[in-house]
Length: 111
Image 1 (cartoon, rainbow, N blue to C red):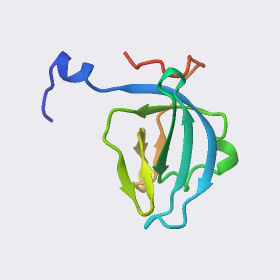
Image 2: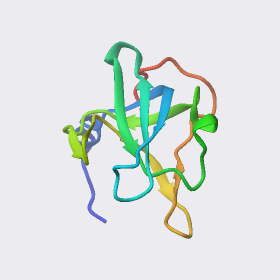
Image 3: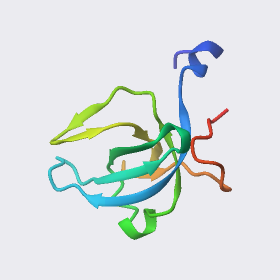
């Protein structure tokens, strides 16, 4: 594992957001959802997330998540993903979302 500096860490924009909408994404190569998130003062952003194994669309709506918002936009099939939804791989490689324990304002930065 490579060590980073405090300045490197400060460049990473991990922000809290609330999921507003979740849609199926049949064009994706691997099962995924399109996820619309409100990041408060940073605006509303979309991402593609391979989280269909552990979560239904209904379970995700209204949930607060942690997103990395300063990655460049990435095209996935016919869709532009604007941030990275964070999580961990379980024993099967399926993604479990990183969690926020108590509500925080949308756009709050992980510190």
